[in-house]
Amino acid sequence: MSTRRDLDSITPLYSAARTQLDSRGIDLESVRAKLNTQAIEVPSWGFSRGGTRFGRYVDGSEARNVREKIEDAGLVFALTGVTPAVSLHFPWDGSREDEYKRIPGYLKEAGIGVGAINSNTFTPRAEPLDHRLRYGSLTNPDPAVRLASVEHNLDCIRIMRLVGSKTLKVWLPDGTNYPGELSFCDQSDYLEECLEEIYSQLRDDEVLLIEYKLFEPAFYSTAVADWGRALTLAQRLGDRAKVLIDLGHHAHGVNVEQIVANLARLGRLGGFDFNDRKSADDDLAVSSIDSYQIFLIYNALVEGELRGHLDLSRLSFLIDQSSHRKNPIEEVIESAAALQRAYAQALVVDRKRLADAQRKHDLVAADRILKQAFFEVPVHAVIQMNRHERGLPLDPIDAFREGGYEAERRSRRAADRPAVGESLF
Ligand code: AFD
Ligand code: MN
Image (cartoon, rainbow, N blue to C red; front, side, top):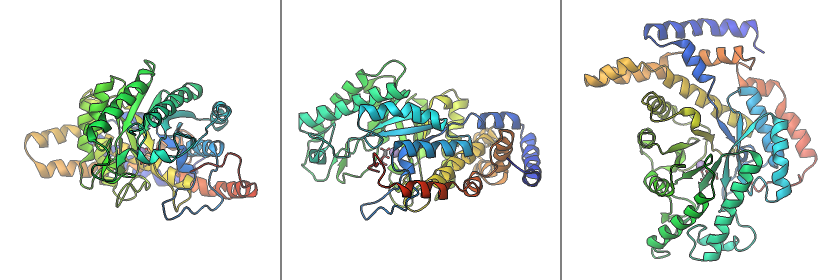
């Protein structure tokens, strides 16, 4: 896949990386081996066109149904080698038994596996999950809505087993818009009772990821608003209930890497929904706004693994983004590549010198050590050498563009609109 010219451009940078790492006693081969184990889940919903309440601008190249989303996810894996699974979302990716049953075939066709299954109690559907969802799902004062919302999650557990997933991911839109709308005591009683029922149906090799979010769609209170509430729920439910951290779900200024370290120490870190944001929960491409935070998160993960607090291979690393303006496939590739870079940067931190600087209160030395890993080691050459040796394109975006994949999809998908099973999102 790579040409002699490409390799000639990498080799000097790769040698410079080796020289720097040798001088710090960091083994380049083990860094490369770890990078080759990195596995990220891409979001099925990231391949259709995202939108806001102001509009959604479809141009005909996007995936329109679960088969096309999985096809696109398969292309990202073929081009990057780091995204072997797709996370699915119901009912966006299907709402009938016959649709669920076709998914294993689509996954096989695409050469990828399945990651977490996302339940969705925010999209209105048949009663009682119709307009009544306005007042919540698992925390709705109407027991019929709570029961149906639990049932939906139990359906997602059935889908997990049908498609080969071991992970149920629950993000709740539940909350209130006004003081007095719902007692916070009732909100928590309902929530805990419903989650206990859902958790009780999971098998010993299945996990529940509880995702928190500060606000939206509710504006006055959110049932699972922060890591503390998600943690207390997980601790109440059992060992296979963990917390999922979505980067866009915090107030500005919150130290996410500290949350990562603390949840890992407690054995309750389940994984991530990676994205980036400037304002709120913007679901922008990873590292498009703040690259340093992603590095510091991976720095906390690498330290957590070295201290025995976590096993990276057992966490769920999802991308959770929504493509409003870019080509969705390109935007997912950008995010996958950004997560590779962040992990590589965290792996080349000189931890011996960092620990020494910390013991001596040498804050400048500690900062320089992190910045050397972030700015100075040419980790992209290390990543590209791995890609070369695995027969992958050195630059997956270039490969996507040179492969004509977008034009091919646009002509094929625009031609037969409306698609069967047009996705809601
Ligand atoms: C929305 C929510 C949350 C969830 C995602 C998939 O804010 O991030 O993980 O949808 O359901 O972005
Ligand atoms: Mn999320």
